[in-house]
Image (cartoon, rainbow over all chains, first blue to last red; front, top):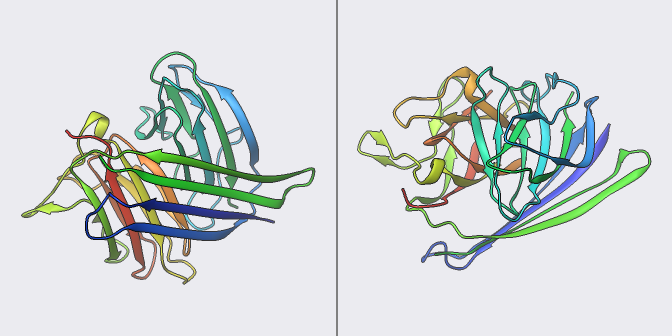
Amino acid sequence: MATLKTTFSITSTDLFDMVNLSKTVTANLTIDGDNRQGLTVVKTSTGYLDLVLEALSGSGGGAKKAYVYAKNLDTVDSLIFADDESTPQVYARLAPGEFMFFPAANNTAIKVKSTANTPLLEYLILEVA
Amino acid sequence: MATVNVTLSLSSTDLFAKQALSFTETDSLSPAGDTQVMGKIILSGNGTQDALTLGTDAAIRPLAGDNDQAYLFLNNLSSTAGEYVQVALRAAAATAGAAADWFAVVGPGEFLFIPISDMQSVDLEPAAGTPAVEFLLMEKALG
């Protein structure tokens, strides 16, 4: 069992007129799954690539849970993320330079493809038992 | 157009025996859609999906723009074990997501930040209890 320390901050002075936005959240996450994929960079394409080396299968805190960090390293093309259905359902898109961090669930796979060309993706996947 | 600055830091000394993990990412976002929502919801409970987008009369206002994209920050304020929140895509505003449509789960005290896409709203359903969640939903572009 390991601990992943996470901090996320979000600020804005002009998203809303009536309030300034300034929030920081922290969480110490327990990583106890048997599939820990460290920081990796991979070349994507316009066909789906499954990022998970072993199918996500845990049952703790929601089915098939894994903490996922991903960043689009490209400066031109976007990346599309989808679930494990036979016809993958898209749920996220990373524009060039964008990142995300979320607890994935309910899917054995995390699929990604590019909108064009072969942009590089940086990612981290940490499974929950 | 507004500017929203985000920073994520991840670190661990025991995740891998041979390598410590420590990095920080920053980004400056420019959400330009006509739906920018900050809110707090006490979820209705297991069996009920609460949608995050604002309503127009009885209907839910759909996310729009190129591929219905939006930045979503979500924080589960519960500290009670078992009160994790399933996050599902609502592909069409008028229809709640199906069982296969949930793609994330936010445990008590956890958060997520994700640029969602291809959904007109987001459905939340707790596994147990009635946890409170705070959220920020920022539509990327006009549609």
